Figure 1 (cartoon, one colour):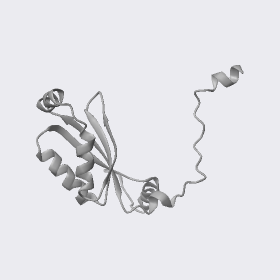
Figure 2 (figure 1 turned 60 degrees about the vertical axis):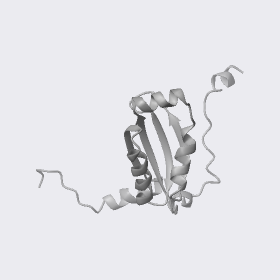
Figure 3 (figure 1 turned 135 degrees about the horizontal axis):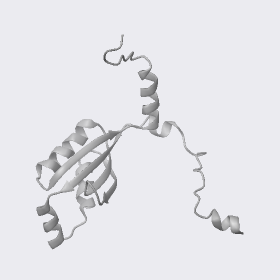
Length: 137
C-alpha cells in the first residue's frame, strides 16, 4: 500500500499502440509556435473591456485555411503563446503580417515546428552535407 501511494504521481508511459508514424509524416499542414507580447496600451484596453482573444486568433488563422490548436497567457519574456496549424509558410506569414500591422503587439515571433519524422529526415540528410568548421582543412 505504501509503495502504491508513493507512485501515485508517476505518469504511466504513453500507449502508442494506436499511433501511426504516418500520422504526422504525411501532414499537408505545418505547425507554428508564436510568442507575443501586448503593448501597455493594449493591456489597458483589455482591462477596461476584457475579451477572449482566442476568438479573434481562431478567426485569423481560419481565414487562411488553418486551425488554432492552443492559446495561452504567461508570465515572463512574452505575454502569450499560440500553437497554429496552417497550409504553408505564406499563409502563416499573412496572418502574422495582419496581426503585427494592427499595432496592438510589442513582440510577435513565430517559429515553424518540425514533426519528429521531418527531424529524422533532416538528420539523415545532414549526413551528406559535408560541413567543415571554419579553419579546419
